[in-house]
Amino acid sequence: PPPAPAVAASTRAAAPFVAPPPAPAFVARKPFVFFDGSDADATEMARYLEEANPGVAKLVDLNDANAVDAIRSAGREQWAASAAAAGATSLCSDLGKLFLALPDGSVLTNANNERWLLGYELEYWKSVTPMPPAERERMQQTIFGPLEMMRMQGPSPDGQPWWTSPNAVQVWGNALGSECFAVLDDFLPPQAMPALFAASERLKSSMAAGKTDSQVSTKGRGDAMVWAKPGDVPELGPLIEYLNALVSCALEVPSPAIAAHLNGVSALSDAQVAIFPGEVNPDSRYIRHVDNEDGLNGRLLTCTFYLNEGWDAARDGGELRVFDSDQTTIKADISPTSNRLVVFFSDSTVPHEVRRSRRERRAITIWYLDQEKHLSYHGEELIQ
Image (tube, rainbow, N blue to C red; front, side):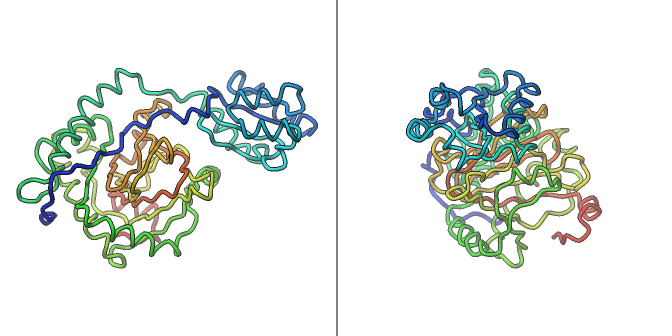
């Protein structure tokens, strides 16, 4: 890109890559399935869940004498107070005849009408495991820590972004090649941020509910989004220039994995501008998925850029959770803090999800593509 305007070395403390544990109020270690045992359909579903997923969730009949104590053991004091005052089954008027309380504090209401998603949640909490502490420490010492030290030094003397220095490229390039993802803070000059945020605000009225290739998994996506053409949104110009520079740097890294994934790049997508309305929608998330699962849609590299000032993952949620290719081992929970870029391979090496957001969460995503494959898959979609 052209030289970035000269700025002083950064003094902003970046949000941690790996989010802290859930808020202490949610103490349950497994999901709780609450159901109205006087309802035949809810009872049948509860019995099926117990047979199909033994030991995964604690099943609680709200008609049981100990139901209020079970609600408290799930860390739901407000529910417990309501149940003690009006009876446990009174919760069903708002939450449904069968509902699922998850360890992260979220709730799947009317779960007997969302059978696919109910099964997904139980399988998720049964199988997902954190990264081993030794592996997490290795990544901190070899990737996240060194990049943070270089970022704090700020741009080069000639005004080039900190992440273009040879030492920085070596670290994040090796991370992309070996871990299949990389995280860069202060990606753009800070003066570019207000215009990008204003552009996302201007596009807000044009947004529609996000969709996926799978109609089933659409139930697990809670954002509103719009495709923006760079020619129509000039504020995207600096971001695209810097992304092009990043891809050029990546291709110079002597990594077989990077070469295998990126040598086919021949185009980039329009920008997907997305907002998860976490302050009004408790389902503002995007369940675990892969951007190019079958290798046919042409997406090669996913580049997601965040616009969220003052983000606190412990308070606001909304982390990008990156999994190992086994889809069960968590590699990192990445806070979507402002001016942070996350890049990762779009294929099945990087399953990922957007965790539930508790405030409005904004992001811009651009994909580097194999144009021929993309046009074959999405023939009607224009690309740049």
